[in-house]
Length: 133
Image (cartoon, rainbow, N blue to C red; front, side):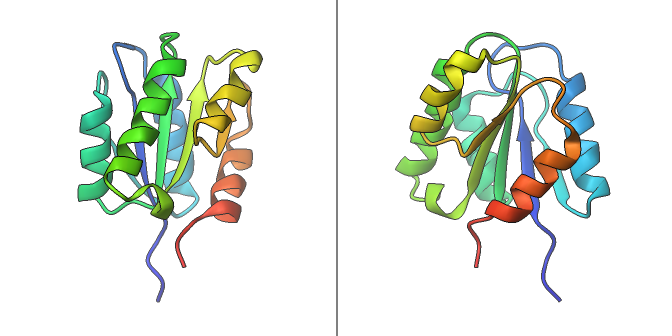
């Protein structure tokens, strides 16, 4: 039997609001995925360490603080430095202006989900874009 998809849900930076992250974590869990939630105020280094330790398939970053153009690419950069980026799907979500999405995708995020995106869209994206064999 194949193991469930493992997803790390993380809140990088000083963002103090995690309702959206908890909603998506619950939806992913209800869809049969294993979810590891790191909690608030995580550094990119802490997120990458947790992703490696937990052997996740997906790193889902939730951010509302406005620091998305710095923090999300930093997580991708550190995953690449650790030679695990090619094994993990990295997605982002939160209050991110539409004009910033192309930059974030250029930097290595597979997709960005903004407020109002149905949770099923995120679930389907993950299932359709996993990097694991």
